[in-house]
Length: 534
Image (cartoon, rainbow, N blue to C red; front, side, top):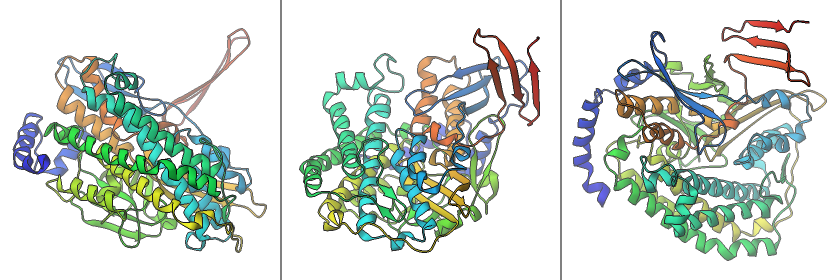
C-alpha cells in the first residue's frame, strides 16, 4: 500500500532529482550516453585521482577509481578488478571427470553453482542431455542448488548489505558491519545466520560437505538422501519458510520507506537476461535463455543455451581483468545487460511457488514501468528468490524420488559439452571440449559477475555523477559507490578467470629479496624484460 500510494509523488520527485543531476528522465538513451562518457576522461592532465581500494563487503578484490578536476567534478569513474586467476587454463589438460570438483575452487561462496554447471556440461560428454537425466538425480541436483541459492542470498543480505540498509549509507563506519547488526538488531542478525546455516545443511546432506562437496557426476549423482537425512532437513524447513516471508516483508518496508531515493540510487535502464522454463516461469536449474529490453520487450526467448556463443560475445578493455559480455545482435555499445535476481524476476512471467509468486506480483506492482530498473530493488528480488528456494526445498523433501537409488545414466560419448545454470548472482556458462583421450582441450566460462560488469560500472558512474560530483569527498560519500556495487553481490574471484589486456608485471625475486628478473606486459600487449645487473 505504501508503495502504490507513493507512485504519483515518486514520478514528480524522480523528475526533479533527474533535473538536478542534469539528466533528461524522458530520454533513456541520453542517460546511458552520459554515464558512458565517464568511462574515460578526455585527458588525465591536472586531474586528481581518488581510489576506494579495496571495495569492502564483497567476495574478491576490486577497487573504484575516480578522476576529479579542480572543482571536484567527476571526469572518470571505473570499477577495476585487480586480481587475476587463470582457471580456463588450469582446466586444460585434465580429464573431464575431474571438472565438477576442480571448478568449485573458483569460489568458496558459490562452489555448488560451478559444480552443477560443470556437471551439466560433462553430462553431455557422456551422452546425457538434461531432459534425460534420471528424475532422482535431477531432483537431488535441484535440492542442492536451492540450498546453495538460499545460503548465498542470506549471507549477502544479512551480513553484507543489511548494515547499509538498516543503519544508512552515511552511518558510522565502525558499526556498519555484521557485528553492528547483531548488537542493534540481534533478532535479524541471528535470523540471517540460521537461514544461511540451514542452506549449508541442505548442501551437506546432499553432497557430504558444506563447502566443496562432491555429488554430481557425469550422467547423474553418486548418492541419494537417506530417510534420516531427509527427516533432519524437514525438522526446520517450516521455520525457514516463516523467516523467508519475514525477510521479504523487511526489505519491502526498508525500500518503500526510502522513496524516491531507493528507486533512483545507482539506477540504470538496462536489458535483462536469464533462464526461464518453457512456460515462462522463473527457473534456476535448467531452462531456455530469455532476454528482455529496457521496456520489457522480448529480445530473444527460449533459446537453446548450447548456442550461447551465437548470442553473447565478450569485449576486452585495457583497464580491468574482467571482460564485458554483450548481446551480439545489439552490438557492444547497446547490447550490455544485467543478470541475477533483479533480471530473473523481471524477465519471468511467474514463479511456480505460491508465496514467492505473491511476493513477485507485489514487487512488480511497485514499478511505474514494465521493468523494475532500481538497482537497490535487487535486494528485494533476492529475498523473493530466498522465499522461492525455501518453498521448493520443502516440496522436494516430500518427494520420494530424493530417496531413490536410480541415479545414473550414460549414452554415446561426445567431444563437447555446455552447462548453464542460474547461480545466485546470475547466469553461469561452462563450456568444455575434450579429445579422444577424454582430456580437456578447451574451456570457456562466462561467470555471472562478468555479465554484470558494464552494469556495475554504469551504476558506479551514476552515483559518482549524481551524488559525488562537485562535492568534497568523505568516507560516507565514497561508501555510496560501494553500496551500488554491493547491490549486485559481485563475486570478483569468479569473474577473473581469463586474462584481459590489463598491464601485468611479473617479478622473480631471490632468497635475499633482490629482483633478478622482471617481465612487463603493457596494455597494448607489448612485452618488456629488464634483467638485474650481474
